[in-house]
Image (cartoon, rainbow, N blue to C red; front, side, top):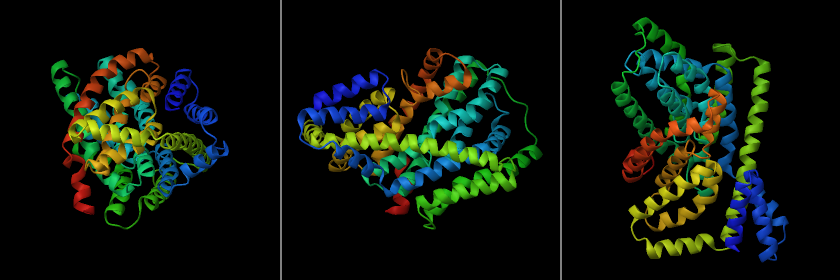
Length: 425
């Protein structure tokens, strides 16, 4: 039964069938062939899969991210970061990574970050004569940090699948996201020295201060979200609603780049994105339920515990599996399917569930720009117009850099767990 299920799913995915259809169709066929369960159960499990409290915050964060992009918050963050680091060698490379980290803290979406930052920064990188391969790899990879930096949609999905606190995951994502982004910044530093990358004209102190003042309303968003959660003022779900209201206020009345017509368009776009994500989650939850019925998690848990006795080796195995899965599957679907499999094993081995969540999301962040099917490769293609094959080859060095950061996140737990242990333990 399990073999038929997995083979059918792989065949459907290779046949370019939409993921949510592939998940549900594989379950339906396996149920009809091997069980007496009524097909109506698929609908019930799909609905119960999205009837989760942790998912309530997701539509608000998606909506807030779109409002921030349309309302001018992202462009001001970009100007601010460039005025600070643009005057050092390779400064536009630093600007790209830092801007993506800050925009990730606004959007929680990797593809949205690539689109918002890439359409502005890629032409500028080329105009300043940065190597094309370096620029393509940087644009495709930098947006992936949004999966770790809170408010990450993928972390919310992990919390939904495992019951782990969204607040703890968000706080843990701060340290992990900084470490992940810092790896790229270090690489840019050495690459800039070796290839003598261009230097921007130095911004005056007055310009830096002016850009800082302009960006203050944008920079306040992660402070409001994380500060409110940290001090117990509101829950992650309430923080999502507050961030959406705050973004509308700033876009309409402070920056005045958001109009009622644009706000309506943002609402429609956000609703479509939410529907796409939730349909995917529903299908993945149905698939995960059927795996449980087929005793796959139990068998996998028993097999690993009997043969893998070291948490270090187990985490290495998790990383290898997820890096491979991330090449072919979107992060939300991968988390929903695999988190219930790895979670009980990790708990039995004494691995902190929050740390496991960060490791899983870091892997899938890398998968976002890993060939052959990394989502950000296709997004970067739409932004730059460069063939996916060239973007994929350019991204490989950044994959290696990010894997190095992943090893640090995996085997130095304090990188991600220092803040949660200080707050929650």
